Structures are given as C-alpha cells and as structure tokens.
Length: 177
Image (tube, rainbow, N blue to C red; front, side):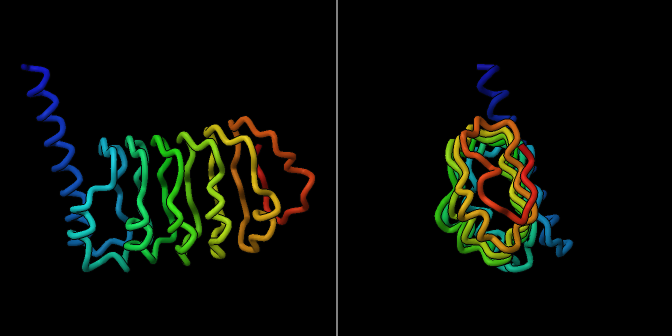
C-alpha cells in the first residue's frame, strides 16, 4: 500500500511540475517549452488546450529524458512554428508523417531513442539543418534523399549499426559516424 501511495504521489508531483512549466511559459511569453525530465509517457492532450493561445509563439520544445513512446500528428500540426525539437533520451520507435509538414524546423535531436529506421519524412523538411539520431538502432540511411536536402549541415549517426556506405553519395553536409 505504501508503494502505491508513493507512486501516486510521484505522479501527482510530475503533473504539477508539467503544469507549472506550462504556466511559466505562458505567463512569461517564452518561445521555449521545456518538459524534459517530467516522466512523460505521452504528450498530454491537456497541454494542447492550455497552450492553445500561444502555440504559434513556441519555437523550441524540449522533451528530453522522458519515457515518450510516440509523438502524434497533432503535436506537429499544433506546433507549426517549431524550429528546434529535442526528444533525446526517450523510447521513440518512429515519428508520424506530420513531421514532414513542419516548415520551420531547423534542428531535431532524436538521439538515444529506439529508432530502427531513419525517419525519412524528415527529408521533406526543407529548412532542416541539423539531425541527430545518435545512439539508435538505425542500419540504413536514405543517402540520396538526404543529399537533396539543401539546408542540411550536419547529420549525427554515431552509435548506430549502420550498413549504409556514407561515402558513396556526394553530400554537402558533415556526417558524424
């Protein structure tokens, strides 16, 4: 019984922490929403409602070091002005199709997740300059599609079991392997 009460207390603290961070973001008119280290297993629907009036002002979201299994299309449709997304240290296995529709995304950190396949929808984001997929289980890279990304400057694929030859396709960006 004590363990159950302790778990409920920890969950209540986590919810209060998320609510406090959202309120601070709104009250201070910040363009950054930091929900890292909040024990999130999903992006709560209530956040969309709370932030409805200021989602266009949010340019950076940090969801690092949670237990996120997925981000839905709604996340990327809601935060349409997103420029920087940090979801490192979660348990993501894929990204939804809507990530390809984010027109202003410059940097995405997907390191230390559970991606087995490179999220090819990212290659549709024309503004994307930095992609970090370090520490996943990715075996192949879509080098031809990546080489067509004119804005791409860096791709970090360290600590992945790659079989793709990253040298065979000419590219204009640096690859950390």
